[in-house]
Each structure stands twice: as structure tokens, then as C-alpha cells.
Length: 157
Image 1 (cartoon, rainbow, N blue to C red):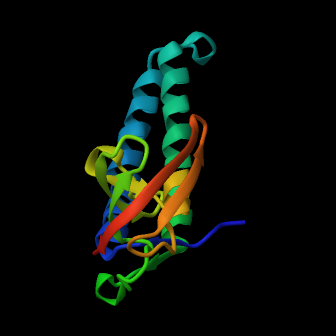
Image 2 (cartoon, one colour; image 1 turned 45 degrees about the vertical axis):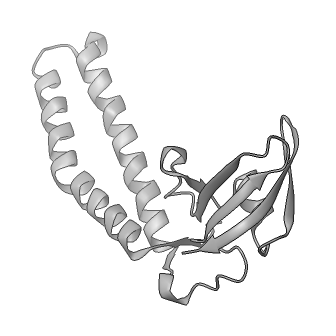
């Protein structure tokens, strides 16, 4: 059973573009690699052929994953986001109550998550813990390292 994923139009466009590349030139490259390996003789002991077939399997799996993600994606219009509470696509300024450090994260879908860019998944422990919180509220989030407390300082888009 697939779940609905909420994404921005930009992310959906990127997923569609990647899928188109994988289906066209990506498949053609894999087919060429298999043909080249096949020309090298006995397929039973041909490591290049085995590697090319394995790459083809990974390639087709990525296509299937992207197909499903695109089908189950719903575009969120950033202009309609309610900034009175934390929702998907909210940028949340918060303070770690343990070490008093301030951090800012944007809550995004699993497909968009990138910690280096300050984007965390809505399904991550911190993302789940922040959903629905308002400015001034404290989110208690259970992590493998223990319970973390974050005070919401600001919400924007």
C-alpha cells in the first residue's frame, strides 16, 4: 500500500525529469553495456555481463520507485500554508532546551529531506514531534539517544 507524499511543484518536476532520463538515455546506456559484455564471450563466466545485468536491475528498481512516488505525490501550494502551527513545508526556528542552541529546519517530505540543507523529513522523529506545535510550545521528542526538548521560537514558509 502506497502512502500519499506531499511535495512542492519544484520537487515533483525534478522527480519527473529524473524518471524521464532514467527511462530514455539511462535504459539505452544499460542496454549498450549489456550488449558490449555479451560480445565478450561465454555469459556463464562473464563478470562484466553479470555487473551490467545487476545495474539494469537497480536501474529498473529506481524507475519503479520514482513511478510510485510520482503517482502518490500531491503538490502543496506554499502560499496556502498556515504559519500559526508547524505543518509540512514550515520552516521552524527552535531552541534545543538541553544545550540552549538555536536551530532551524524545514519540514519536508521524505523525497526532499536533506539534513545538510536544513530539510528534515516529516516522518522523522523530530519532524513528527514538531507537527502541530505553535510558537512557544515545547516538543518532547524521543530519539535513540534519549528525549530531546525543543522550544518553537518561530514558524515561517
